[in-house]
Length: 215
Image (cartoon, rainbow, N blue to C red; front, side, top):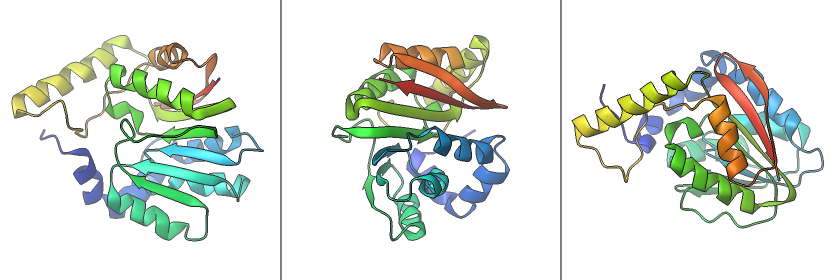
């Protein structure tokens, strides 16, 4: 298996991405609707991390049509597609690395959909602190992601990723597309360590899992 740079991977699959997520990733179609239900009904601002083509926004806009969205993603082509879908919505799009892009503060809610399983736990730990700081006092973070229940399986994925990077001479300073899902328990622990005081799983279908963290 040859690892592909993250943005290049998704750019190459842009045309099939939406159909793949809706029809072939078990639980995602249902999770898009579930995520929208979990947003506070009075939310006015949303931070969307790894927003891609904005599939999650379709359901969110049905529930809160006027919500102001800040979306961050590495892949320019996906952000362009998102903008084409929602030309009349209040959306600010940033093409960049959400580990590095400043978020600002005061967001009513933040979401991420099937993006966090590409990164190491130490990277996510720092990101979750950054998300927590970006939320208002009553803010909510909703993460839908590919999660496993076995620590042995989590360890296997991470070992294999490191082996492939070493074998292919790839740098730790770049992002490559490879699934490294954590266990549900480890994800919850990371969010609690980051400062979220009320963290729980609210949805799971196959490995598609939603966790909600509140400040």
